[in-house]
Length: 510
Image 1 (cartoon, helix red, strand yellow):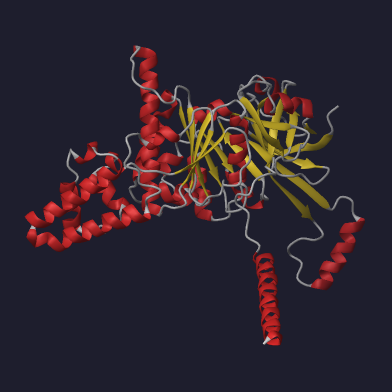
Image 2 (image 1 turned 60 degrees about the vertical axis):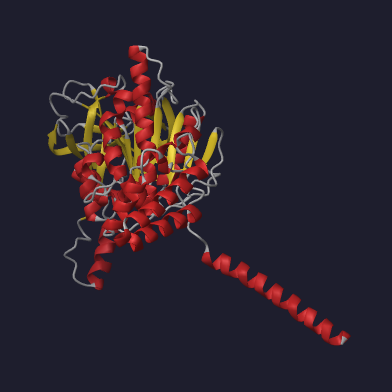
């Protein structure tokens, strides 16, 4: 039996009602109300308030507040508990994955009930292969919450929150579930956050760039030739002849240096610039020997189908990481397009990934910025627009939504939004989704770590969720400076004591 918790008051609308409650009401609670035709309507609490007539904000001093407190404690009618409810639709239709609002709103005076767990389970915890469980409802913890991974892969996902609120934890929950299917996932790990992850079907990769497959302009960026060094760029472009692109391994680098040497002789007035280019090439070959591979195969060959592939970008600076991510995105999208064409045209093209693939870009505000062009932004936008047709999904993760390109963010069919305080971030998130009301936006600062608002096509209904915690993860944890300093002091004291002991013994022997 449903528990009555309130009565509809004021002006009711088909999509919104206010009710007076018998107890304080929490953000994210689900309620059921009968409409004018006696059908059950499901709603979610978007905001709530508690008011005291005696303890009003007109109180001007402490003594008055003390007296009013006594009056309020003796008056059972003093407290008012109001809640704003977003009507989600007719319950029986929602359980069939159809959102249909009542034609006539619930009448004022209609009773409001707590939604029963079995009513919610059909909606939030469906029993189908494409639905993966990642947590429980925030206020009804006995009800599990699943997300539709098919919708993530075909309609994309944005994971947005302040630092430390659980973004990486959510990615790991998704990765673990996908690894058990097993599906294919690629995570670009800029800060080595996923190094300590423990799950089946993992494939750790250090990011690699094949310089033979880059344009001279992109290679100049990788080896850090300055933007304004036009003559150096021209020399590098001339050295990048067609023959060079057919050289592999050490032969590539030797041929490149030989080409630059010839240009030093033939273009004497640019000899100093050519020498500087040669120094840059040698320096890059030495410093980036684990990243720049002029081999015959492309770096995408290290990505394994049916695995969770974590590509470490730790050794790359921002420009190099941007080129690397774009490099992989271009190859992956081209491969998925070839797979689709082969399916329809019976071609014999080599296909590396015969099944859909899901890509995760961490620090999306860095690589997909709002006000500047980057290669990653270009290809991420292509994946966001075209990926659905070719079975390539995109997840963008960021703690600064205001700095992400709005065109890409608006293509995310689903969002996981955690605690966000900055007004500019809230505004950007609101513009990215029609499902976010002003009331919901205002509640985002009140979310705790591990709590998230899920909206969009990957859930049947907007839901406030307590995400499961991945216990065996190391990512995203803040350092413990005090503990590290204490350990360092103990080690230092131990070394000093050993040293003093050695000196004393040596002194005695002498």
